[in-house]
Each structure stands twice: as C-alpha cells, then as structure tokens.
Image (tube, rainbow, N blue to C red; front, side, top):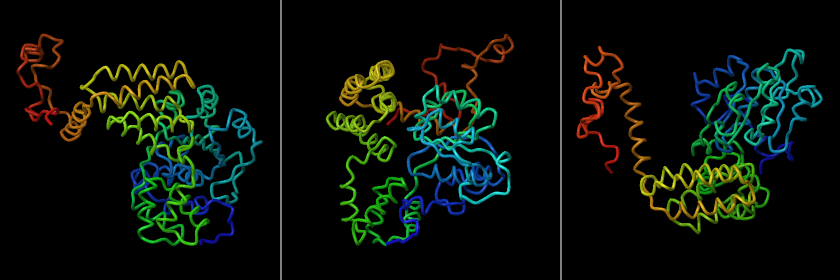
Length: 398
C-alpha cells in the first residue's frame, strides 16, 4: 500500500499536480502555445470558467493558475456557500488565502490578486451571481468557476460576458493510465484496464476506487475492484460522481425505445437530487437529435415538458418528466436531420466561404439585378441551389 504521512488526506489530493508539467490531459488548453498555458505562463489576471465532465482537472487547473499569479486562493462549493461566505473573503475574515502550493510570499496581501474558486458555479442562483458581478467587474475578485453544466444556460449573461470559458474534455485511456501509475498502487494489467473502462474519463473516480479498494483488500484485482464498487450504493450523487453515466443510460434507453429502462434511470436521477432542468434540456435535444422527422411533435412535447419543469418545479414536475420520457421513448426514431447538419458542418469547415449561386443571392439594387443577382429566385424548384463545388451533395441520402 502507498504510505504518506498525510494518511488522512484523500489520495486524489495527495497526488494532485502542482505545475503544468505534472498535469495530465487537456492538451488543447495547456499544451505548448495553447490559451490556458499561455495565460498561466504569462501571469494574466482574469476571471474564467472551466466547463467539463467530473474528474478532468478543473480544481487542479484552478490551483495551478492561482499559484502562477501568486494569488490568495479561496475555494468554495456553490452547493453549500452563500453571500456571507463571499463577504468574509472580501473582508479578510475568511483568512488570508495562500498560493495553491501553500508557499509563503514576500508580497503584501494588498498587492496579491484574490482568487475565488467556486466549484459547481451552476448551483449559484441568479441573486447570488448578481452579488458576485460587481466584484468580478472591478477586479476585487478573480473568479474561477467550475461546472459540469453548459454555462450558457446556468451562468447569468452579465457575469458570463466578463469571463472566458475553457471547455475540458473527458480524459483519454492513456491519460487515466498515467494517472493510475502515479498513485504508486500495484495492480495487474487486467485490473488497470477494467478500472480505466469503469472510470469513463473521470480521474477522481479512478483514484477513489483504487484508494478504497487498497484499504479494504490486500490486493487490487478486477474482483476486489468490483466488490468495492458494489459496496458504494447509488454511486451517482448530486455533485456529479456518476452524473454522466446515468444520463447516458437514460438517453440510450430512450434511443432504444425502452420506456421501462428510461423510467428507471429517470427515477435514479431524481432520487439522487439531479436538477430537473438538466434532464428536461436533454429531452429537448433528444427530440430533435434522435426522433426528428419521424415524429416532429416530439420537439413540441419536449419543449412543453421543459417549460412545465421551469414553472412547476419539484416534486410535481416529476410527473411532467415521466410523461415526456414515456412519449420520447415510445416515439419512432429518425436521426437524418442530425446526420445531415453534421455532414453539412463538415463541408462548411472544409470548403470555407463557397460562393452562393447568383440566382439566389440577395438583389437590393438595380445594378445587382443586372449582374444576375436573384435571377429566377423561387422559379427553379428542380435546380440545385448548392454552391458549384457541392453540386449534387445529398446530406439526407443514407
């Protein structure tokens, strides 16, 4: 077993990287020449949001950034924090924060940026976010928000406009393999592969599972990992430990037209305290992505469910979610619109700004009409209105 003098401290905390050189994953943000790396290396002081699945390095990146700008670092969870906690930080009553590696500094406190890392920022309500706004705007607080939810939906526009958004991706199998190796715990190749697949891109989940297994059993094997997993009742929790696994099972059950399975996963989410608006938003997406043209009224129903959830709230909106879930699961499925926009987006990226055919261009002036703009507009139903390079392209041809 791994020994550390800070034995009471969770393993994930003990092996947390302190520098970008030690950080694993998110190369699109922290690789050479990438935006977050440049900001950290150059000491830019600004507020930002880290948006991505659980266990992908949001807290670690916040600490590395705070250390790089030699900031007072304060960490709160939006689940339990409120305005009074913010006031304490602003007044200094919350204690003088340290840089993330807890090294002393020669700078006076007045000269140091004050960083607030607000985990699960999407759980702050509008009033709480409004309260933060003037301090972020003035620079009195450097706010780093972490969220598993789309900030466009959950963060007020005034606050969001003053922050950059960095999107984190699930960790790859190679990333997780490197992180597992860093724990120093011994396990077979088979057990390691099973753990990586179970973790589903979540480093914290992998590390916690390893730590729990090492404390319960003399060896870490596939069997002991499974036993540890079974001992953790309803692994999905409000903070997103199993967040993506269960919502994925819910969506896939509706996609497979299995209303009983979909209803069970809906119940799992509701029982575990999931935000009903999160579920309703996924239903709206599903209605267009998976049902689409097969039953266009599905989008109407899903939107109605979302509106009902907003208006009614829990516990009554469980009925609206159940109604919508059963409808979507039983509906016919057609992904052609989803596939079509995906293919069209690829062409748009690949070919750039292809010239629009003259006959369907806007012709607001006489000269433009003389040049052929808008010629035969609406009178050529059989004609191909695609740019010349894409003539004959059929995005709906499966």
